Image (cartoon, rainbow, N blue to C red; front, side, top):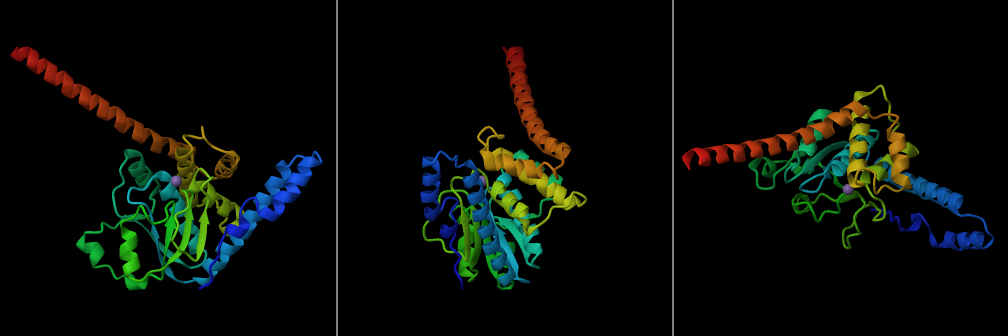
Length: 282
Ligand SMILES: [Mn+2]
């Protein structure tokens, strides 16, 4: 197995920082250099990921999410699935827990996001033939938040790819690892891979429009609705803006809000009913 470490393609590699300091001493602003360095790092990452996907052409993979997946995880996993399809890799996206917020349920339902729940204790999960999967992929997590990982590891399924933005977890090995703790959203990372050419989104394809909408939602929710977004998130959002469906995003956001409103009304009515009852009794 060839291990592809991304340490060598860190956005600001050691060998380049000296050059940048020299430039700064000369009074040359490094912003452009940094942009081109990031560009080069992204090119190298994309090439490395492409090689890994090529090596696994035609395989079946499980994409593992944290037990309580959020919009960033859900949308990023979908983007990965679409990218992998380009290499004839069939993916099933899984989580073991629950879709906990109304907003996540709305996102999955309204975009037909292809995700499945595999509850660890359910007989259905236990009966699964895991021998048909050649690898698993961790997106927006590194395994510690998924109850399913030990099950897959027991079945001998190797971790092929990890793409995440949480702090690096030691001791989790994968053929390809892209963990960027300084990046706000995995959706930003996945959008960069799309932009780098791993999959050209086509606005005439409903599936692409829906995935772009999901990514926009994921990116926004992990950046506190862009309030904590950095340049790379804005750049990713700008790219997604060419494809996403703003009305669909609105519907997703509203459905969560309307559920909250309904909950408030419901509890207010209960309190009112209780007050009326106790008054008539008193
Ligand atoms: Mn995330």
